[in-house]
Image (tube, rainbow over the protein chains, first blue to last red):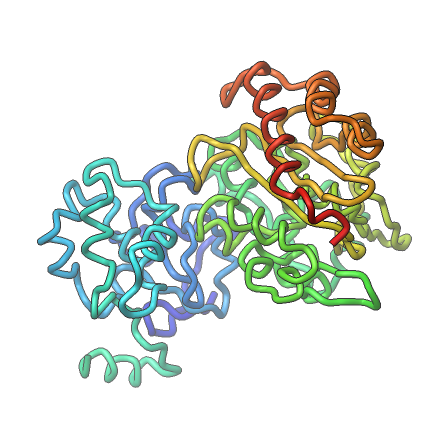
Length: 161
Length: 278
């Protein structure tokens, strides 16, 4: 089945109802997406489908046919320094999901918008304040890579950024 | 568990009529769309069914539009689409409020109103809104279409008036006269299943519906009648506490639910005072 994964066109064979989370981790070897609760409560497995955050544990693989899937591996920037500086990442299991949920925010989001965007992401270490401080008003909230039609174009874009 | 999910069959019709034929001829099939409820059960092995019908590709079930004076919401409308719809915001702002309080952005991006209705949970957040708005559930089978008033759609705990060969295609909402009010009480703002959820309309004949206080979402006609004839709020609260049948469960107790329902009724009445029939 064809879909776009982090800006690249891919063709992956997997059962239609297999969880997108498992397809990413097992069939695509992208283990940055974490499994937390497995029932859509914790947000650890958050990825973007067509730019919108979803819980990959609740998405059947069949539903991403022809869609753009972006995982933590596809974010242009790695963990922002602010998240480290503010103590917004400790054990780290929630961090990829937090980053993906925040990726849908525009630049310089207010603290209220960050809290709303992260309402579905549980963190048991930080108490959230560090995460919100790090992401609110951030100049460069990580954005997903721009989708490109052909793999070559996508790679070029990656190199440039 | 991933392997268990991998063994299940998915039928993917291209059109509504194909979907309805599959339901009739190839059943039993479990329809799926946003999967925000279904996948929890499937993953934890509480759903025995093995064959599923994918509705997500059916364009006939999409869209939010106005048909003459009726708001028509396609069954596949997601909570995010409801929140963003200027039409819903103008006609039924309490549905926007309810949708904003469902789950999280991740859930709102996937969950559908048709799924919330079909899932038939007494705690479904949009359901009291649809009850007070006197919505009509539009159901289709190969044999044709029928329109079931919300009031008679639920026949018991997690039971609906639908047959296994039928699909919800849309929800129709007539114009709502009066000031609309909504409140969800849960353990926290996001991701919480409601302890109590209430929607109400302040009009000469007030309409009030509650979730999580009975086997189904319920209107409370006796309480509405007390307020309609000018009874005091204290009298209406007493009536309400008799009229609902809450239970003790993992989320709350019957006593808490009775008391808080009565408090919410008073809050509705005071916050909408002086603006009746607007």
